[in-house]
Length: 272
Length: 275
Image (cartoon, rainbow over all chains, first blue to last red; front, side, top):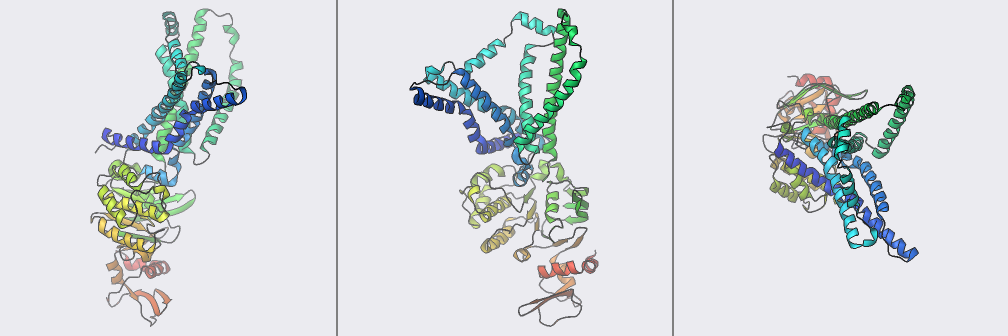
């Protein structure tokens, strides 16, 4: 028997895990995905009530709600596997005959891919449907996303410039995704570490880290003589950007791997 | 076989188990008895890998339970005192969860559930504590595991359910299984547990089969008070007395009296049962 990772057993476990998530959290995720519909109904209702005009929410309003709900989903990441800290449910989970690696991979796939994609599909899908049925609301958010992606199709000159600064467009896009992963992993880790007040402690840690980092920056930045760059030539400026980009890559990658390691460590050693 | 060597565990500065050693062989239903706080539940959670020993070693068929390898996990089932109410019907829960245990039989689950009179289509989070416990007991038995660790399995069960539990556990477990039942409700289970383990914080006070106990101790239910009894209790219509069996006469072991005798005369009993 393969005690570390068996694809067959992983398949069985993944199905079990996703069924559990669906049973416990599908309503919440679908509700978040339907936030655009809720906004639309409320907007139209108040429009009719106060202005006697039928008009749906514009793209900006829908984007704003989408961004807020996406943030709520990040906070909600603490709950998907938060049951691990519960004595009864956590014990049951530990004792399910699947390996730690299989449980870990399933947890990552669900947290980083399945849940965000499900949210995006429901949100953008319902928004597209609203736009299809009601022309007063303008373009669907999806077109905004398509435009954004089109904007990320860099032209030749951009690519040459980016390469000079050691930044490939693919890497740039990967960086955006990896930072998203880091966010989800952070909230997942808080969810499986703290027994109670998971969201509160997660926010507290963010505040704590921000305070520490701002204090550190306050000490470091005055030490950097940025006036050197005021009249700097193109090469020097490219060097500066290159340095910043490399630092960002390293920090984001190390942070994501560190958070992933933290989740692995926690599920390997959790006791009840 | 389960081998426990010099096992120690503590919750922070509070030591719970110290230097515990014992062997658990398949084919028996072990009764794990002990006062409150001696670490019966802790021992069970250590055996199934929910906790890591502070010192010492647990070996189950070559596995360290804390490694939580699937090869061992599919051979054991831990039934805690309090079980989780799942948002699913008993049938769906068993169908989805049972697939991880190689020996699991859905038919057996349905059959046991029927015998303990629980509706397989009822949602588990809408069940009473007793029904929920019976569902988990049925699931445990349907897993056909080699090792069972049960913590107070009869807690929350009504009188007919306790009888059903005794029947089910003798009927549906294999002779190759080792079942360790931790309980305070000794009267509920005294007819099925054999051997008996009586635990103290720092020691295993007694680990002996019912035959060995009845060979070395005599349980007298008469009215005449014997001098030198290790334990004496007045009950309506007579007494229960426990004293060393010098005549070789057989008697029915009374678990409560045995437990009290062991706790009252720890060293005497240990010396008597020393192998």
